[in-house]
Image (cartoon, rainbow, N blue to C red):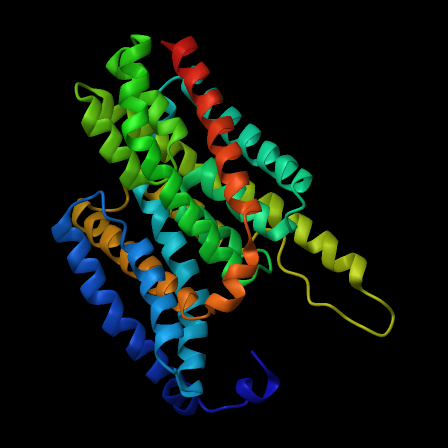
Length: 342
């Protein structure tokens, strides 16, 4: 926020945010309701970001909307990531056993580092390949959004990463049951495979349902364990960002460095702990899940409104190639782990 903006009265600040936030709300509410009616396989985050891109490029948006859209794309996003922690029970993750936990750590570690290495070989900008690495290795669009909250990525890079997550994760929905059946995997093994390999929670639900048996429950638990890896990954990213900004400092220029661990990451962990110890009643958890979806959907729409297609086209073919390689890498590790654990 600029110094001028910080000197504004609270009433002035609210009035400057109102137009943009009103637009965000007008889109978010029907998108969330529609996705709930359509079923778990429809991601409101994807729908919202696509609508944002369409609105930006088909309708001349007045600059009066910019402050509210900026707040939605940053602060609402971080609040949504905090509430995501309420969906995670550390006890349920621990109960899966050391083999599954080790597999989750290996999938995320190998997926992130391998994708970063392959992206560098393809000549992709660090921020772009990092968004793809987090989205494909951790938890899809939510991980892309969370990583964007720590690094300085372009809006077009965020949109491209989210789009690739959805496309390639959707392709994996029929592949997991077909490949699992062909290899003779048990339902539990296929559930581990789906939860460890597929990008979005909604996509995991679709694949687990297709497998049948006990696969769905196993797949969701493994996927939520991957979501939990957001915290350490974001902590490492924040530390890297601090070092990067420290190197940019000079005697004449002071660069404000981010905290060692972002506040919203601490909030994410605190929410997960509260869920684990049973401090949050079930009705509150249900409300938190809906609110989390609303906040992340609002943030995705706001991010989409920052994208101009003319700039998005400059992203090129390399991110798509990286998406293919990252999907293959994560899937291979996940499948190998599912076979070994089973």
